[in-house]
Image 1 (cartoon, helix red, strand yellow):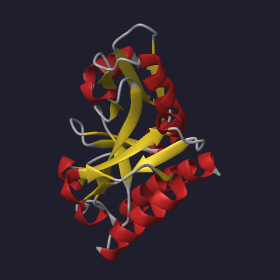
Image 2 (cartoon, helix red, strand yellow):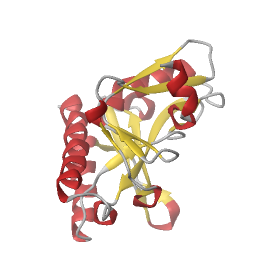
Image 3 (cartoon, one colour):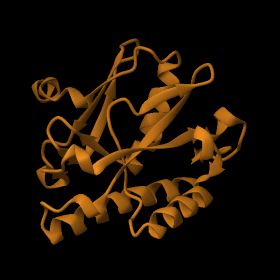
Image 4 (tube, helix red, strand yellow):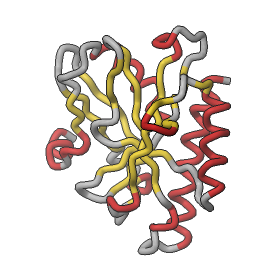
Length: 191
């Protein structure tokens, strides 16, 4: 496995600049099951993976399950993945009892106050549906970040399913299904 990770730098996440590394890693491990990981250098989406971190180290390894090749989608160009500005935040970092909150970008480059997951996802899905799209969030290297002094958050990217023209309709359907299925884990996590 070590050879695989070293071949794909997108799976080695640098957390050297994070002041609260342990807190960030704990939060990431708590919510990462709700998201697929995208690797732009190999144009792959990983739906089954494990996260490894050695306390005191500056790197986090996101390793796809080598026995679940069917859980890896290939030939997904970087052009179909875009940044959203959406942040998944631990509730305690913003003084809320909810386990996880979401902050959404609003006009003028500002962020909304953190909103409970269920309400935030309803708002986000409605916005995407108004544009004829599904909300298909994914994460990639660099999405585990920090705000305030040492509070972690997870930035989300989104996949534009309408641009997956090189995939068969069955593969597109499967990719969309697995991303939505994983996102439901976030809903269940806070229920």
